[in-house]
Image 1 (spheres, rainbow, N blue to C red):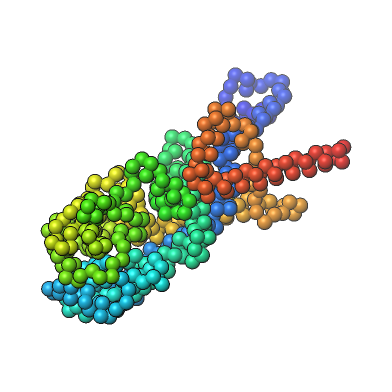
Image 2 (cartoon, rainbow, N blue to C red):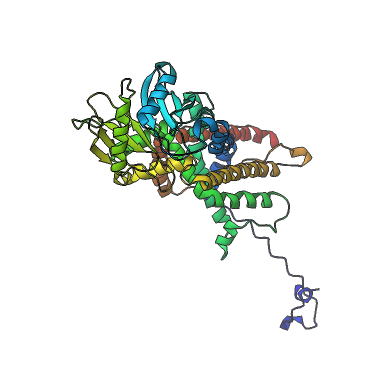
Length: 485
């Protein structure tokens, strides 16, 4: 029986006649071999995912815990942070005097006047506390002290503990390496995953295939890959923001970022608090921007606050007294969009505004960096920001679990080849790259490795180990060949 008869097709050759030899079946089309660049990207994505994912799991879990700090503060420190009723606030001098009587030691570091249901915060610095302070909370309407906490630039003990857990696992500078590794590789995994999924999901409906998991796929690695990839695409923008903002805080990459901003004159500008026109130290992201002063006149705080309010600084503010003969800094501290970050310098003797620095006048990169930090901390958009961060953390954990599951599903299951995990993608992609890719890619990779050391060092480690394993496998193959003949 001919193939045409099997298919039911009518052709001129289907008339009765001598039996024709059956047509040979066409050879099966060989599977498409990935390009050298795609093969290299697959191998890099695999190794980075397997080896860096544990750092990302820790970062996601600790970041998820940090997202609830505003609600946790309101539960744990309701007496210190809030008041039950509001009215006409008492003078700041009276509130500061009450705080000083409650906390007689230490230097007066700064004052944040209470507004609405929030208490006034009077901050004292003590040498034995290092970069932490004692904050005394005062009812602004009765001048009654509500309590005292050891704070870190305004953060409560619970928030400080969770922040330290997320940043360095309470291990100091040594622990900061983990978070920098996670931030340095998160963007690589996100962009590499999108590129691989884009290449795999071809056709006219490519965008739809990128965003919608293939629910028609049966159980197995195809279905897991679909959920892994499409979820990663949905999370990509948020993960890139977290990676970039996390790097600005990191130890080495953050230092390079700050140096780059300074070189471009795009860093955070400094408010001039010197009455002779000398600018103050701009400080860091968590810095108050001033030095502790022990003998600041409490009455001067009312003058300075009135001058700042007249100058247009509304909402929550922080007053930082300066050294004798210098102006005091007053800064808005509203980090919720639209943010209030304007600053003025006020002469405490007569309440004259001597300098002003508006957030709108910051360089664009400094503005973007500051807003990114607040978004990373879950403050920029309030509760919505917290929900988005929590969704990103949970989604990232799911993507990681699916990635490891794919590795397990691809393991050999034959009795003679049984293994606990799948084999890594085949090597050799680097050798097949066109020369122009190497000419462009190598300098770019070296530059990235210099700017992001915890991207460059692990990448170099991957290459060294992979090369050594390849040489060892080749040597074993050469020694085994004569024995098989």
